Image (tube, rainbow, N blue to C red; front, side, top):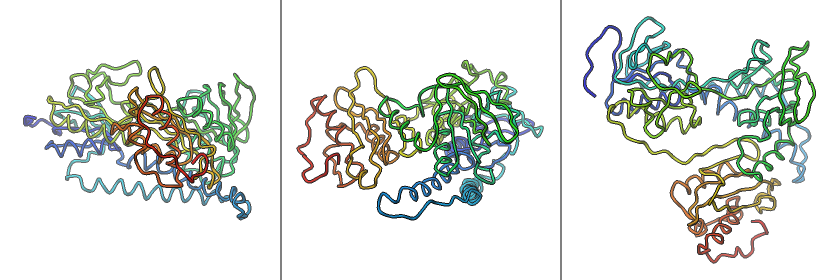
Amino acid sequence: MPPMTDRPGLTCDVAVIGAGTAGLAAERAARKAGARTLLIDPEFRGTLCANTGCMPSKLLIAAAHAAHASRRAPVFGVRPGDPVIDGPAVMARVRAERDRFVAFTREGLDDLPQGTMIRARARFVAPTRLALSDGRQVQAGAVVIATGSTALVPGPFRDLGPRILTNETVFELPDLPASLAVIGGGPIGLELAQAMGRLGVPVTLFDQGDRLGKARGDAVHDALRTAVARDITLCLGVKTTPEPADDGIRIRWSGASQGAQVFSHVLVATGRPPNLEGLDLAASGLALDDHGTPVFDRLTMQCGDAAIFIAGDADADATLLHEASTEGAIAGRNAATHPDVTPGTRSPAFALTFTDPPLASVGAGPGDGVICGHSDYGNQGRARTEARAEGVMTIHADAQGRLIGADLCCPGAEHLAHLLAWAVQSGATASGLLEMPFYHPTLEEGMKAALRQICRETRQPEPDSRDFGQAPGA
């Protein structure tokens, strides 16, 4: 990139708007490529994952697992008695550990070159010129938009006070709710609903659709629904209307079922759209899609042919931490070398929902020409020893037996899905995986049935292993 001439205000080669996971990755990649960078953020409070996303939700889920393990212990002949849930202690630990994770993410900011961090809001006044809320302007060679996402609260739920929660506010509760309505059956809604239910909170989850967690395939969805329904009440295929009540929020619903109930709190989990408000994208000259999001190339992260790039939740493409990190690195590198841009390498789609059992999807789903192999974990050896034998796995392959994707809701799915994602990315075949060692007894052995089915249907050679001595379903 040619050197820039001095102008009033600030100048840089690459300006990054937003200091979350994608923004930090973009700034780091741009600086590594030799660019002079500015990282602009109004708060520098750490990443979404650490503050209100991945980590606090997993802390709550960990508490829920402990309570659930205590209740199910009698199946093993262990009788600890009913757990006593100390709601304030649960929430205090969530916040304390959450704050530790946030502190770790902020420590990385200490390594930035002096003058790189600009605490302000930014908006476009020209394609590569930004106006800051502190009155200064920034002239950049290229700009990366990494402003993340924000919780969507539909109109009827606004202005109903602090009893309306999102994933950005629920962890600030001093105690567990007396009762909870969850609006939305996506990953956030499912995880928090089941966790609250296992912690003794009466929970009802409402969704307009009849599909939970974006599950692909009926068998996988049925396994998820059956598991979640043990801990919470499901009301699917309904529309909801909230209204204030003396002791909470009344939810009225109609559709596949109808009714009304008062809840002490309502968690709205209806999505997290890109946080683009206030950027004045009209001044950027970018083409926008029907939702007002810049049109971009997901291999280069470039918006059209402009010197503007976008990464992370701001682009509404693959709103996951590992994808944000990858996109940020691609965007930052290409912003530094613009107008020369290079396509980056994207991994297969990979998503996890930390229900129990977890829901996972990898790569391509079922479709025309796709060969599917199935494994039933309802009688799987290791799962039975742990009294959690339930769920299914479907592995997808092409006509040559090469793995292209998977869907699963079964014990250990968060670990099994990693193995399958790596297999898909490496181009592994079902026959090749069956030649790998499978220790006994493990949950990994449960994959064998699906892999063997793919071998039979694609006429791949099946390794001569009959698992002598193993229990049925191992």
